[in-house]
Each structure stands twice: as structure tokens, then as C-alpha cells.
Length: 205
Image 1: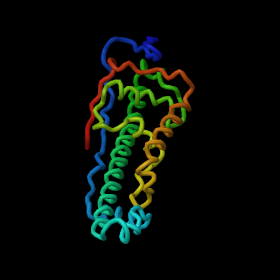
Image 2 (image 1 turned 180 degrees about the vertical axis):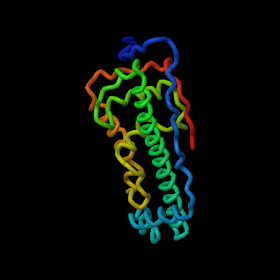
Image 3 (image 1 turned 90 degrees about the vertical axis):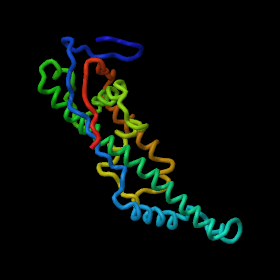
């Protein structure tokens, strides 16, 4: 067991690379019907009164208010698809962890490293840390947030079911809290997987 700073790394027998399954990410950030998504966002803006109608009489013209409503709808859509991109990454990561488990279970040298917890195994957060240690390019997305959103939602929620407060303020807090709670359910210490001993590809579908 190697200790570097405040982290403990598992010792693997031998010196060769361990080939893990590819991490496959389904890109869910491109809508098929952008006009329909914008229409849903516009209805959310109207229903939630995100742009107060008092502007019509006092501060701005009707054209200015319509422009602000369109900007707000675009902002909602942008935040929503940002959430979807995180969710799809989290979904791919959890499925990748399942496949890594299979790889470990079929290798006598690797099998003892996994604890036989109930899925989703909190101790498997070490695989998320492995992705971070390997500097996996996630296009600016937070991996822990991605996994947290996937833990919170079995399916990505449709736009009309997500509140504007969630999209603007709450999704980071909820996702990070979900991940930290999941990770904390495993008895410590959380032994890290040595990144130099593992190899895998990241494929965007």
C-alpha cells in the first residue's frame, strides 16, 4: 500500500498495464427539435413569471419585454442542456464502473480489491477518482457532479418537469451532495487506484 500525501494507493501485482473497458459516453446535448425545446422553455418563462409583467407599463416597452423573455428562455435551454450533458456523462460512468467490476471479478489478482457491497457500490467512487487522476477530458464538465446527477435521476427529467430554480441554482448543490453522500456511505479509508497501472479509452457515441 503506497501512501502519497493524504491518499493511499492500492498495490497491484506485477508491473504491466491493466486494460479496462472503454468509457462510452452518449452525447445527449443536441436536441432533435430545438423549436419544441424553445417552446417549452418559453412556456416555463410565462408560467413562472420570470419576467415581471409590470415592465410593460413602467420600465420597458413590450418589444423589450419580449426580448428579455426570449433571452430568459435561451438561458433556461442552455442550463438544461448543460444538465443533460452532465447526466449522460454520469450515466456512462456508472455503466463503465459496472463493466470494470466484471473485469476485476474475472481477474484473480484484481478480484480481492473490490468490496462485495450492494450496487451502486459507494466504494466504487475510486473509479471516479481514477478518471480524474487520468485527466479524462470531459469538455469542462465536473465528473463528480455528473455522477451525482445520475445517482439522483434514473432518467434525465424533461424540461417541463424541471424548475427554473433547479436549473439556475440547485442542480450543482444537489448533484455534489448526492455524490458526496454516496461516496461517504463506504467505510474509509477510500483506497485509490494507481492511475499509471490502468489504461482505457473514452468514446463519445
